[in-house]
Image (cartoon, rainbow, N blue to C red):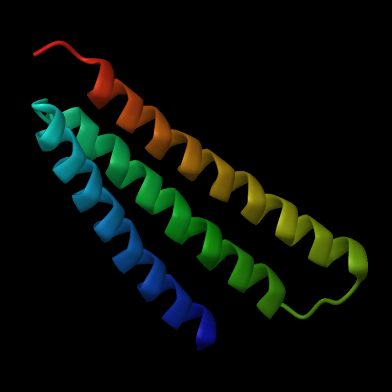
Length: 98
């Protein structure tokens, strides 16, 4: 249950991050293109999938330290890819010509 609440909160946080990227891009005088939104959406889906996957893996209760480490490693990879994709999108918006 708490994992579902965390997913909802993180989804709202990603929506806020997307809005802030839009606001910053507007401040730079840059246009946010449709594929920027698609990349941010993909980052959000990766974030939520990572938390859902982690919750499913830990919820299996198969036990074992190695199993938990594998679940955390998979979540960490998805989490990092999501953050890198968001930062990459921001850099693309910032560096584009008008």
